[in-house]
Image (cartoon, rainbow, N blue to C red):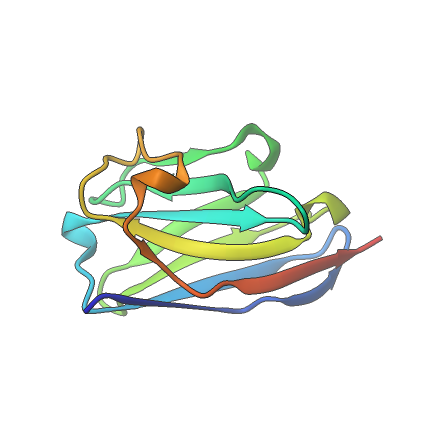
Length: 126
């Protein structure tokens, strides 16, 4: 049974950095696309970033390009989202997700993923 567990969320000042982790037991990164989504209060869950099964290709929503970096550590079975120069608009619950069937360049909707973590709260103060 694939299980995803996020950690690393918290309170950070605008302009600061935070690194989110996604521990993925029973998941093989070689056969799954990994993605990060976020959901602000009262809003729908939205795509943030995805990384290909090989880890060689990454994709980002325009609002985080140049600030966030998605990566995976196959040996540790862990995915990461490095968040730099955070802004109050980045405040949300962040979810990692895995897709066994959609390639990273096409996996930008919640419906493209079949495994989800429980989420971790990120709050950016101004």
